Amino acid sequence: MHITVGIVGGGPAGLLLARLLRRAGVDCVVLESRDRAYAEQRQRAGILEQSTVDALRSCGAGERLDREGLVHDGIELRFDRRSHRIDFPSLTGGRRVWVYAQTEVVKDLIALQLEDGAPLFFEAEVRAVEGADTDRPTIRYLHRGREQALTCDYVVGCDGFHGVARSAFPDGVQRVYERTYPYSWLGILADVAPSCDELIYAHSPRGFALHSMRSPFVSRLYLQVPNGAEPADWPDERIWDELDARFAVDGDWRLARGPVTAKSVLPMRSHVLEPMRHGRVFLAGDAAHIVPPTGAKGLNLAAADVIVLARAFARLHESGSADLLDAYSDTCLRRVWRAEHFSYFMTTTLHADPEQSPFDSRLQLSQLDRIATSPHAAAELAENYAGLPLG
Ligand code: DHB
Image (cartoon, rainbow, N blue to C red; front, side, top):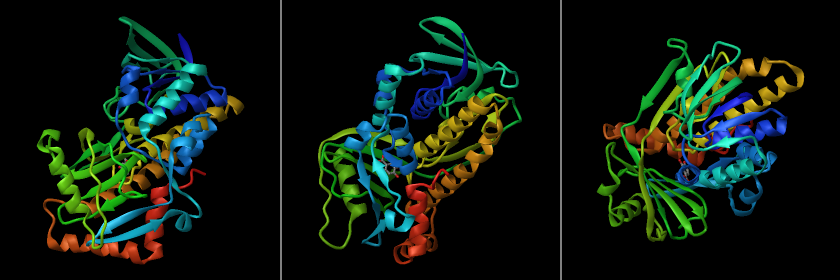
């Protein structure tokens, strides 16, 4: 079997790329190692930037998002027992974000793809991507007990941090930039109406807490926990008590409690591979870069990669010019490094490093106070949070 673009990975990046390529008239196949139920249930982030929403709408995947997604025009920062709101539209020329879970995006994209899209194979376990330096890179995979080979003009690895596509790059052609953090997140879903209209990012001497949501009836909350923490260390009561302590403000705000329906620990790391292309193999999303979750850039960065890539394939298809494909890695990495910096900034400004000195804590509070009192400092946060225009 031969195809123009072979996509390894049927997460949001691979599926969005397939939709965008279909619109551009470029044929492709998507190979996903997990089954459909797994892909549709995995809990991930829930904030979509304007440009991600625009791309989903442009390929027909905006209908349920426009019906059920929650538009947010700002966030609240809490520190020093005070609240401060950052308004996005007034600081960014009208940009805003949507609360709509990644799992819902994936469900919508899978449904469209199976309805009228290019082939999407579940439980297709990619073993190797070979021939990045040749004109015919090949994806070797196992499907229904049979070894298969898909030869492609181009291969795109959207198979995440632990995927196989990145191993298609020969030794020595890539540089890795990394940072780890001395804390993790414990995330819960709870069947209770959110206690706020907008997300709350809280700095406290006890550590970071985030109040997010999935719908008017479901809250999503995160707590900074030590590395190595297990969900079993955190009975529900302990979680709610700790959230109460970290969100505490002067005034009469209260956190509503409800049944906890999911609980998991998320690692925090920053990771960038450069370049994002070798020969005819391209990497997109988590296969190429990871950000810590604070600020919700991961999914949006993955979407930005495949939007750039789809435009490049469309140009090749229409005019025969590979100029945008050749520029892919440099174009994406500029945005990637901006998001890496923003995510690092949000993480290190809001979390309590177990090693941090009282001096470090005062610097964090000073920076937060600056954001709360200077429209310039607030605009810098708002522009990065709501997402820089894709051009
Ligand atoms: C969510 C996750 C984030 O990392 C964040 O910064 C905001 C919201 C979420 O899952 O809702």
